[in-house]
Image (cartoon, rainbow, N blue to C red; front, side):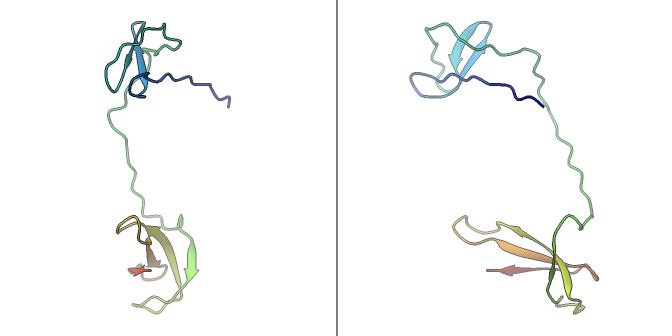
Length: 109
């Protein structure tokens, strides 16, 4: 797959991206009109996506397995994943799901 080079121009007043429509360049942030001739053009063929489909799956095999004892059934294997559940300056929360009984629990660091 070949990558395309994308050129961008920025506003000389506020630094926001310049948007070119109908041959006229205007700042997306402050609305300042560029005096120089724009070097880039926006294709009118670009389509806007109104919705994105999210497919929920019950497949746990996408998560890695670790050796840890389930507090409910005492099985020794579980899937795990991490998620930021508190402030950004605090460590993430580690979640576990037993491979046998499907019990889910979390461990804060």
